[in-house]
Image (cartoon, rainbow, N blue to C red; front, side, top):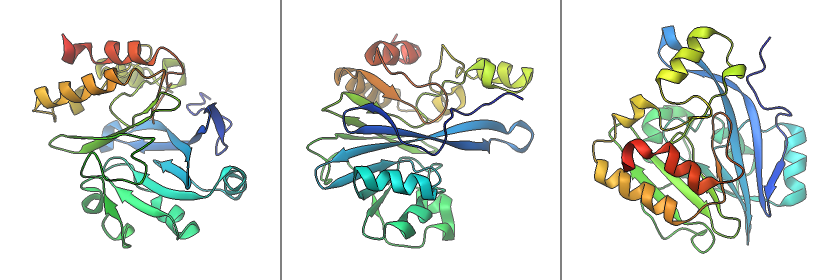
Length: 244
């Protein structure tokens, strides 16, 4: 059977100084008749004062022990309205950590998130500003909040680029669907249906140009194969439909 994940799962994997990823389990997402398996990925960055936890995946006992060896979670991040599911588990495990939600996460999560949180509705004024710029990019359906770790030149995206590998997809129709949607490796990009929700093309283009201006060495994605090198070139390629 095709393994659509990126094992080993639920374990810290170093990608740069003070930056780790954790590959999580599959989820299924999409309309009822077109639900696709999505691999999941969390990013953890060690900053002065604690760990920045982006798009949490399941918190197993073994993973919690590994995290304790590198630091204490201080900020738990939901970067867009569909990346929140495991945040309550992390909040319960680390009650001293502050939780930050992208706009409309509370609307999406309902009673699942019933505790105090802050909103990622601006570009500055966060505890991590010195090391990590914050870039909220608003569309009709959702706001994705983009982060860039300056010391390691690591860009952290969620759904702005998806990059599914054909050999990890279990059926021909999923391979066709990802190709049609513009999210199949090596041509991963913003999903075509998501593009349609960003009517302010000038604003989206300005955001992408900001990301390119950061000159990232690597780009971490939540779904599919991420880019450990040539990050700026991959950004230009993935958004050429917008920049042309």
